[in-house]
Amino acid sequence: EVSLVASGGGLVQPGGSLRLSCVASGFTFSRATMRWVRQAPGKGLEWVSTIGSDDSDSSSATYADSVKGRFATSRDNAKKTLYLQMHSLKPEDTAVYYCALVTSATLGQGTQVTVSS
Image (cartoon, rainbow, N blue to C red; front, top):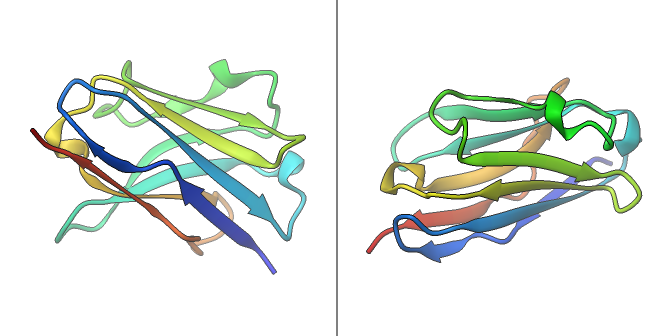
């Protein structure tokens, strides 16, 4: 059974940074293209980033325009963990963040990020 558990969220001031992690199990993580999505209060899901299966090539990750230049996705296949490093956070980044396989609509356990002064 696929399990995806995100963590690392919290309350941060505008301009601050957070690093999210997502631990995966139940599938061959090292072969899976992964994505981060988020859902802000009262809004639908928004794609944030996608990264290919090769953990030695984080430069291949793609990003939504709203986070480009501020967020960076990486992965450690040995640890079956996906990361999202977030810098220069803005109030509009407030959302529940989830990781997911690109081939599935299933979301795991998300983590709340709140950007507020």
